[in-house]
Amino acid sequence: MPYSVVGGPALGFDLTRLAGGDQVAAVLRAALAAGPDELGRLAACHPGATPRAAWARARAAVPTGASRDDTTGGETAVLRRLETSLLGDQHALDRFVRRDVLDWTWLHSGPMAVQDPVAADAADVLADAAVGGYLRGRLGDDDRRAMAAPFVRAGLPARDGAARTGVAEVDRLLEVLVGADEPARRAWRDVVDGLRLHTAQWAPAMHQATWALSMTERLRLSCDVHLSGVLAFRRAGFTARDAAYGVWNALAGVLQATAVGDLLPASEAEVLLRPWHRVYGTT
Figure 1 (cartoon, rainbow, N blue to C red):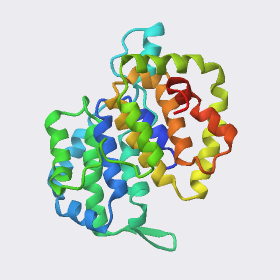
Figure 2 (figure 1 turned 180 degrees about the horizontal axis):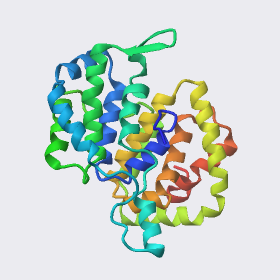
Figure 3 (figure 1 turned 180 degrees about the vertical axis):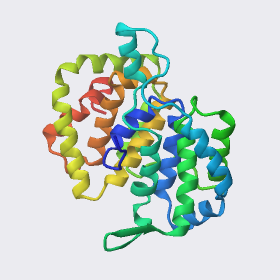
Protein backbone atom coordinates (compact mmCIF):
# COMPACT_ATOMS: atom_id res chain seq x y z
CA MET A 1 0.00 0.00 0.00
CA PRO A 2 1.40 3.47 -0.84
CA TYR A 3 1.66 6.10 1.88
CA SER A 4 0.14 9.52 1.15
CA VAL A 5 -0.77 12.79 2.83
CA VAL A 6 -4.40 11.72 2.43
CA GLY A 7 -3.67 8.61 4.48
CA GLY A 8 -2.06 10.18 7.53
CA PRO A 9 -4.00 7.87 9.89
CA ALA A 10 -2.76 4.77 8.00
CA LEU A 11 0.84 5.99 8.05
CA GLY A 12 0.47 6.69 11.76
CA PHE A 13 -0.88 3.17 12.32
CA ASP A 14 2.35 1.73 10.95
CA LEU A 15 4.62 4.17 12.78
CA THR A 16 3.00 3.55 16.17
CA ARG A 17 3.87 -0.14 15.77
CA LEU A 18 7.51 0.34 14.72
CA ALA A 19 10.44 0.65 17.10
CA GLY A 20 11.76 3.66 15.16
CA GLY A 21 8.38 5.17 14.38
CA ASP A 22 8.98 8.28 16.48
CA GLN A 23 12.19 9.03 14.55
CA VAL A 24 10.35 8.64 11.26
CA ALA A 25 7.56 10.93 12.41
CA ALA A 26 10.00 13.67 13.45
CA VAL A 27 11.83 13.51 10.09
CA LEU A 28 8.57 13.60 8.13
CA ARG A 29 7.31 16.56 10.15
CA ALA A 30 10.53 18.42 9.30
CA ALA A 31 10.05 17.52 5.63
CA LEU A 32 6.46 18.81 5.63
CA ALA A 33 7.59 22.12 7.14
CA ALA A 34 10.63 22.57 4.88
CA GLY A 35 10.83 25.41 2.40
CA PRO A 36 13.53 26.35 -0.13
CA ASP A 37 16.02 27.46 2.54
CA GLU A 38 15.67 24.22 4.50
CA LEU A 39 16.00 22.14 1.36
CA GLY A 40 19.20 24.00 0.53
CA ARG A 41 20.62 23.16 3.95
CA LEU A 42 19.67 19.51 3.53
CA ALA A 43 21.13 19.33 0.02
CA ALA A 44 24.42 20.80 1.27
CA CYS A 45 24.73 17.80 3.63
CA HIS A 46 24.22 15.20 0.90
CA PRO A 47 26.67 12.34 1.58
CA GLY A 48 27.42 11.52 -2.06
CA ALA A 49 26.79 8.51 -4.26
CA THR A 50 29.22 6.03 -2.70
CA PRO A 51 27.79 5.94 0.85
CA ARG A 52 24.23 5.92 -0.49
CA ALA A 53 25.02 2.95 -2.72
CA ALA A 54 26.29 1.03 0.32
CA TRP A 55 23.15 1.94 2.27
CA ALA A 56 20.98 0.83 -0.67
CA ARG A 57 22.65 -2.58 -0.57
CA ALA A 58 22.05 -2.82 3.18
CA ARG A 59 18.41 -1.84 2.74
CA ALA A 60 17.94 -4.39 -0.03
CA ALA A 61 19.08 -7.14 2.34
CA VAL A 62 16.32 -6.35 4.86
CA PRO A 63 13.51 -8.95 4.71
CA THR A 64 10.11 -7.64 3.73
CA GLY A 65 6.66 -8.79 4.74
CA ALA A 66 5.13 -9.56 8.13
CA SER A 67 6.87 -10.48 11.32
CA ARG A 68 9.93 -12.59 10.83
CA ASP A 69 9.67 -14.33 14.18
CA ASP A 70 6.16 -15.81 14.01
CA THR A 71 7.28 -19.40 14.49
CA THR A 72 4.23 -20.33 16.53
CA GLY A 73 0.84 -21.06 15.07
CA GLY A 74 -2.75 -20.42 16.01
CA GLU A 75 -3.96 -17.42 17.97
CA THR A 76 -0.48 -16.35 19.12
CA ALA A 77 0.71 -15.92 15.54
CA VAL A 78 -2.45 -14.01 14.58
CA LEU A 79 -2.02 -11.63 17.49
CA ARG A 80 1.65 -11.13 16.65
CA ARG A 81 0.84 -10.31 13.04
CA LEU A 82 -1.64 -7.67 14.17
CA GLU A 83 1.22 -5.96 15.98
CA THR A 84 3.87 -6.29 13.27
CA SER A 85 2.32 -6.53 9.80
CA LEU A 86 2.64 -3.18 8.04
CA LEU A 87 0.37 -1.50 5.51
CA GLY A 88 3.36 -0.08 3.62
CA ASP A 89 7.09 -0.69 3.36
CA GLN A 90 10.40 1.16 3.09
CA HIS A 91 9.89 1.76 -0.64
CA ALA A 92 6.48 3.31 -0.03
CA LEU A 93 8.02 5.57 2.60
CA ASP A 94 10.82 6.66 0.25
CA ARG A 95 8.31 7.50 -2.47
CA PHE A 96 6.11 9.34 0.04
CA VAL A 97 8.96 11.70 0.92
CA ARG A 98 9.91 12.40 -2.70
CA ARG A 99 6.53 12.47 -4.41
CA ASP A 100 3.98 13.47 -1.76
CA VAL A 101 5.77 15.56 0.84
CA LEU A 102 7.99 17.30 -1.73
CA ASP A 103 5.40 17.36 -4.52
CA TRP A 104 5.86 21.12 -4.88
CA THR A 105 9.51 20.67 -5.94
CA TRP A 106 8.71 18.81 -9.18
CA LEU A 107 8.90 20.65 -12.50
CA HIS A 108 6.27 19.60 -15.04
CA SER A 109 6.21 19.85 -18.83
CA GLY A 110 3.31 17.99 -20.36
CA PRO A 111 3.51 14.33 -19.30
CA MET A 112 7.13 14.73 -18.14
CA ALA A 113 8.21 15.68 -14.63
CA VAL A 114 11.63 16.16 -13.08
CA GLN A 115 12.52 17.18 -9.56
CA ASP A 116 14.51 20.33 -8.91
CA PRO A 117 18.15 19.19 -8.43
CA VAL A 118 18.56 20.82 -5.01
CA ALA A 119 15.26 19.31 -3.87
CA ALA A 120 16.32 15.91 -5.20
CA ASP A 121 19.47 15.98 -3.06
CA ALA A 122 17.43 17.14 -0.06
CA ALA A 123 14.95 14.32 -0.69
CA ASP A 124 17.82 11.81 -0.53
CA VAL A 125 18.82 13.13 2.90
CA LEU A 126 15.25 13.13 4.21
CA ALA A 127 14.41 9.70 2.80
CA ASP A 128 17.60 8.14 4.16
CA ALA A 129 16.91 9.44 7.67
CA ALA A 130 13.26 8.37 7.56
CA VAL A 131 13.95 4.90 6.16
CA GLY A 132 16.76 4.35 8.68
CA GLY A 133 14.26 4.88 11.51
CA TYR A 134 11.63 2.80 9.73
CA LEU A 135 14.04 -0.15 9.60
CA ARG A 136 15.28 0.11 13.17
CA GLY A 137 15.83 -3.40 14.50
CA ARG A 138 16.16 -4.83 11.00
CA LEU A 139 18.99 -2.67 9.65
CA GLY A 140 22.46 -2.64 11.21
CA ASP A 141 22.89 0.13 13.79
CA ASP A 142 25.97 1.53 12.05
CA ASP A 143 24.12 1.87 8.75
CA ARG A 144 21.06 3.34 10.42
CA ARG A 145 23.08 6.00 12.27
CA ALA A 146 25.07 6.84 9.13
CA MET A 147 21.86 7.28 7.15
CA ALA A 148 20.54 9.75 9.74
CA ALA A 149 23.78 11.73 10.11
CA PRO A 150 23.35 14.07 7.09
CA PHE A 151 19.85 15.03 8.28
CA VAL A 152 21.18 15.74 11.77
CA ARG A 153 24.05 17.85 10.36
CA ALA A 154 21.59 20.01 8.42
CA GLY A 155 20.31 21.30 11.77
CA LEU A 156 16.72 21.92 10.79
CA PRO A 157 14.40 23.21 13.53
CA ALA A 158 13.25 20.28 15.66
CA ARG A 159 9.85 18.84 14.74
CA ASP A 160 9.75 16.30 17.55
CA GLY A 161 6.94 15.82 20.02
CA ALA A 162 7.45 19.25 21.56
CA ALA A 163 6.76 21.07 18.27
CA ARG A 164 3.19 22.27 17.96
CA THR A 165 0.93 21.67 14.98
CA GLY A 166 -0.48 25.20 14.97
CA VAL A 167 -4.03 23.92 15.52
CA ALA A 168 -4.72 25.10 19.05
CA GLU A 169 -7.33 22.47 19.94
CA VAL A 170 -5.20 19.63 18.54
CA ASP A 171 -2.19 20.83 20.50
CA ARG A 172 -4.29 20.98 23.68
CA LEU A 173 -5.56 17.43 23.19
CA LEU A 174 -2.07 16.10 22.55
CA GLU A 175 -0.79 17.77 25.72
CA VAL A 176 -3.49 15.96 27.66
CA LEU A 177 -2.67 12.67 25.96
CA VAL A 178 1.06 12.92 26.70
CA GLY A 179 0.23 13.14 30.40
CA ALA A 180 -1.46 9.74 30.37
CA ASP A 181 -0.70 7.46 33.31
CA GLU A 182 -1.52 3.77 33.56
CA PRO A 183 -5.16 4.35 34.64
CA ALA A 184 -5.63 6.64 31.62
CA ARG A 185 -4.05 4.11 29.27
CA ARG A 186 -6.28 1.41 30.73
CA ALA A 187 -9.31 3.66 30.22
CA TRP A 188 -8.42 4.05 26.53
CA ARG A 189 -8.16 0.26 26.15
CA ASP A 190 -11.48 -0.27 27.91
CA VAL A 191 -13.24 2.38 25.83
CA VAL A 192 -11.90 0.91 22.58
CA ASP A 193 -13.12 -2.53 23.63
CA GLY A 194 -16.49 -1.11 24.55
CA LEU A 195 -16.91 0.66 21.21
CA ARG A 196 -16.04 -2.28 18.96
CA LEU A 197 -19.71 -2.85 18.12
CA HIS A 198 -19.81 0.68 16.68
CA THR A 199 -16.71 0.44 14.47
CA ALA A 200 -18.86 0.35 11.30
CA GLN A 201 -19.66 4.02 11.95
CA TRP A 202 -15.98 5.00 12.15
CA ALA A 203 -14.94 4.54 8.50
CA PRO A 204 -17.75 6.67 6.97
CA ALA A 205 -17.11 9.41 9.52
CA MET A 206 -13.37 9.36 8.74
CA HIS A 207 -14.19 9.51 5.02
CA GLN A 208 -16.37 12.57 5.59
CA ALA A 209 -13.66 14.26 7.63
CA THR A 210 -11.00 13.47 5.01
CA TRP A 211 -13.22 14.87 2.26
CA ALA A 212 -13.66 18.10 4.23
CA LEU A 213 -9.89 18.36 4.75
CA SER A 214 -9.33 17.84 1.03
CA MET A 215 -11.86 20.49 0.04
CA THR A 216 -10.18 23.03 2.33
CA GLU A 217 -6.61 22.06 1.31
CA ARG A 218 -5.71 20.92 4.82
CA LEU A 219 -4.41 17.46 3.96
CA ARG A 220 -0.77 18.37 4.63
CA LEU A 221 -1.84 19.94 7.92
CA SER A 222 -3.80 16.79 8.79
CA CYS A 223 -0.79 14.61 7.98
CA ASP A 224 1.35 16.71 10.32
CA VAL A 225 -1.33 16.43 13.00
CA HIS A 226 -1.24 12.63 12.78
CA LEU A 227 2.56 12.53 12.83
CA SER A 228 2.46 14.68 15.94
CA GLY A 229 -0.10 12.23 17.26
CA VAL A 230 2.36 9.37 16.71
CA LEU A 231 4.93 11.17 18.85
CA ALA A 232 2.38 11.89 21.56
CA PHE A 233 1.10 8.30 21.48
CA ARG A 234 4.63 7.03 22.13
CA ARG A 235 5.40 9.62 24.80
CA ALA A 236 2.15 8.69 26.56
CA GLY A 237 3.41 5.14 27.02
CA PHE A 238 1.10 3.34 24.61
CA THR A 239 2.53 0.25 22.94
CA ALA A 240 2.48 -1.44 19.56
CA ARG A 241 -0.16 -3.78 20.95
CA ASP A 242 -2.33 -0.81 21.95
CA ALA A 243 -2.04 0.52 18.40
CA ALA A 244 -2.85 -2.88 16.88
CA TYR A 245 -5.95 -3.34 19.02
CA GLY A 246 -7.58 -0.04 18.18
CA VAL A 247 -6.24 2.72 20.41
CA TRP A 248 -4.41 4.40 17.53
CA ASN A 249 -7.46 4.33 15.25
CA ALA A 250 -9.54 5.83 18.03
CA LEU A 251 -7.00 8.61 18.56
CA ALA A 252 -6.65 9.18 14.80
CA GLY A 253 -10.39 9.75 14.55
CA VAL A 254 -10.22 12.28 17.38
CA LEU A 255 -7.39 14.13 15.64
CA GLN A 256 -9.11 14.07 12.25
CA ALA A 257 -12.34 15.43 13.68
CA THR A 258 -10.51 18.14 15.61
CA ALA A 259 -8.45 19.25 12.61
CA VAL A 260 -11.63 19.90 10.63
CA GLY A 261 -14.02 20.61 13.47
CA ASP A 262 -15.37 23.79 11.88
CA LEU A 263 -16.75 21.87 8.89
CA LEU A 264 -17.58 18.37 10.05
CA PRO A 265 -21.28 17.58 10.59
CA ALA A 266 -22.16 17.01 14.22
CA SER A 267 -23.16 13.37 13.69
CA GLU A 268 -19.75 12.43 12.21
CA ALA A 269 -17.90 14.51 14.79
CA GLU A 270 -19.73 12.71 17.59
CA VAL A 271 -18.65 9.31 16.23
CA LEU A 272 -14.98 10.28 15.95
CA LEU A 273 -14.80 12.18 19.25
CA ARG A 274 -16.70 9.54 21.24
CA PRO A 275 -13.57 7.74 22.56
CA TRP A 276 -12.07 10.99 23.83
CA HIS A 277 -15.28 12.00 25.57
CA ARG A 278 -15.57 8.61 27.24
CA VAL A 279 -11.99 8.73 28.52
CA TYR A 280 -11.78 12.38 29.53
CA GLY A 281 -15.34 13.63 29.60
CA THR A 282 -16.35 16.56 27.36
CA THR A 283 -13.26 18.70 28.09
